[in-house]
Length: 309
Length: 243
Image (cartoon, rainbow over all chains, first blue to last red; front, side, top):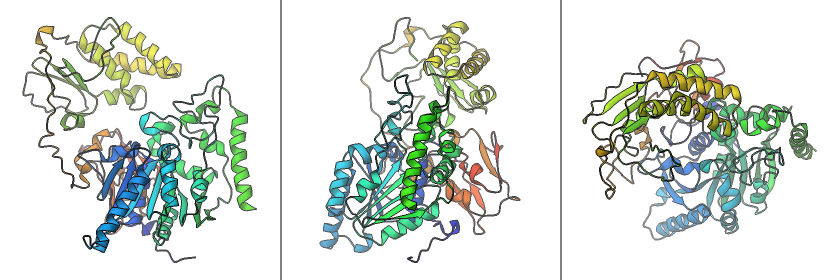
């Protein structure tokens, strides 16, 4: 085990890089993740964003960030990161930028840009061993445009494009893409999943990632009160429930080798997580859809049976 | 607001409104929204606010305010305002009867798939809002200025664009999004720092001993802190006395 400076919540850095007043919904999980992630990264950051909810965070002439911001089209945030990284390297190489003013290039996108529209440019950037961070704030749909399904929307969830109907009573019939494994298959130095409920785990992972060079990718579960149909106050509790039910495994992969950083000792039934969200309400009302709930539980159990073996 | 007996196909900005309904008082002074722009003599401004409005109208604008959020909390138990503000608009126009309004709410909310009891609560709320304001009627069409080329204005002194300014969203007082206010009870607080950590906004700061204080100018009232506090030391109030 490496030495970490994060042991308890008392160790959360006090410096704020994200000030209040951003144009994001009350209780936004992605905002909380970015705030904590930035604390662990420290200053000297340039965020590269692809179109999504997070884009609304820095709407001209306002920005909540005390760091730099670069906005790209939906498919091309990692390509934008490449340009910025190259420019910084060239300036430092020519002596026009002091190395102490070097910036960490951090891509932040939603799950739609990460798993659908921008997957090719991410793959390319990892393949070229670009020295950057990637933070995917996953609220499991295209939240900014009205919560349409993305390929990270879980099976059984209702979204604007997968409404439960008499033909498809379960809502979304497609499985959630395993973006962690897609990223890991490129064998980058560091890939991790994080949750806003497990803050020390998140800070330690960023701390570890800072010791590598090359692509370092993070997949964060971000409860979305607006899209999930939950109370804003429940955001952190839901993220915690996702970890405790085993639906959101906390893990990391160093050069492709996977470690689980938190194995829930006794997993709660997935029903506890599902029944409090409006996007899963059709699984419980008017009649309980036992088959779909059992299938979701089975997938979670299968996953952990492989881990624990 | 556009009113017509036939379906309205036109979309886009209304430059010279006769009525402006503002759901949220902080929007009044927001340079990127500018809801008062285009109001002319005889326009009606309605603001959802529990407090007396101290606006000094520079033009002869009729100013009304009611605590619609308070009524929504009373009837629905949540700050859902669409039916309520719609009802106010119907009444102010002087053209729409109570029955047509109720019929429309029932029809539109049923289309959204809401439960009958939720629809009924919205109807009750809308009826109360309808009766809480007086009709002011529509201005004559003679007041309407002719079409003109739209001038895109510079943002003005409240929001001077500056590419290098950082962390300036604190200027946006998102505290007025808040319906309920979290209040820390000092006697129960153990300075554990959990509320500070989990505040999505970063609205909670801690002093040297670790005791939290909340920035009410920007707190959106998500109430994550009240749920996460292990000692239940953060109480919820409808509106803080000082706000």
